[in-house]
Image (tube, rainbow, N blue to C red; front, side):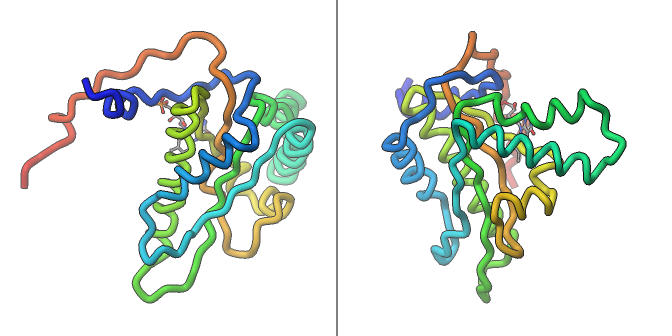
Length: 185
Ligand SMILES: Cc1cc2nc3c(=O)[nH]c(=O)nc-3n(C[C@H](O)[C@H](O)[C@H](O)COP(=O)(O)O)c2cc1C
């Protein structure tokens, strides 16, 4: 098997992530890969926030407060879960979609480009020997969280890419058959 093809076919998210996470230089390499996402008219409809160390606690507080605003009756367990969510990995990269007015590139295409960038980040993390998982959840769509993270009006969160070193064995990959998804037209 071609090693590069094998690598692409084996990508596997990891929900349990521990230190070490990619360092600053490695993150730069990962972003270079992410920014090779297909991008109609080369608008670069993305930007990234890196969150690590104690800033993860600050993100957790933001998520907790957002939950309380969405659901004033949220119980203590749910609030704790929200504040601890960002502690599930040593590094989080928030992939933000930023939209540009363009006569040929509607917002959906820009969203898809940012999503491809997120996928590129995950692949690059694996190429460097790390692991990751793409997460969203209600907080990713919450305007209070958006404000706290400094999103500009109209920007969206494409995903939070949790990154680090896989803790424990990789989960088995599903056996998918291309024939189930491919028709000839
Ligand atoms: C846009 C998007 C949002 C996601 N949000 C979550 C999430 O909030 N929580 C979660 O456990 N998985 C989420 N996932 C799924 C995981 O990233 C992952 O794909 C899934 O666990 C399957 O693992 P695999 O990628 O190794 O097949 C999301 C995936 C995408 C594309």
